Length: 108
Length: 116
Image (cartoon, chains in turn cyan, blue):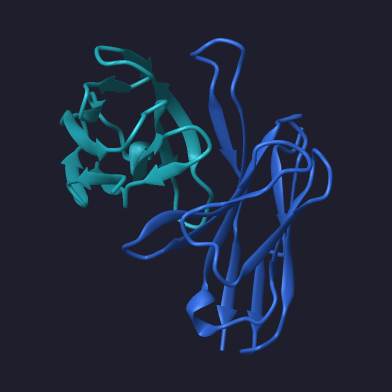
């Protein structure tokens, strides 16, 4: 069964305290691993797509990496405005399988 | 450039009523999707359309129908609403570029549906 699992469910960080979010996937024929940010009451906002093990992509304080079974979203020196739910999704062509997300709170 | 737009923003239905959720994108994307998002379940794909004139079932299609009216518009219809269809519905569009590294997916703001 195709499945995506994210951990932890929730994470509270002090401003400036770096950490990582995990996305584990078991899908047949991964075409790409997508990361999104979702603010309360809004639609997900696209961040990155990763395609092959070892690939890394960065955007401001965020860096996403990919292995054959997992992806990590590293947050370096987070700020309160980074507080949101972060979603990952495995794409196998036209099917997207989403995890349930990690709710990140950054405390000033 | 509005991206992906959805109407309505909110809707309350009684069990058995029907309604159509509208979605439009102005990015000239070929692929469009309908998802539902429920607490603790994550986003689940209902239907998708890889191109104008084609539609396919996703993970949870029962109780829904879709129409890809043209390249811009993709509608989701609930023929006889049930309380289990209370959810937030998101439309999305995506484009897979000619080379890897150009694949993106953009979401609309969502429709919050309550079925009583």
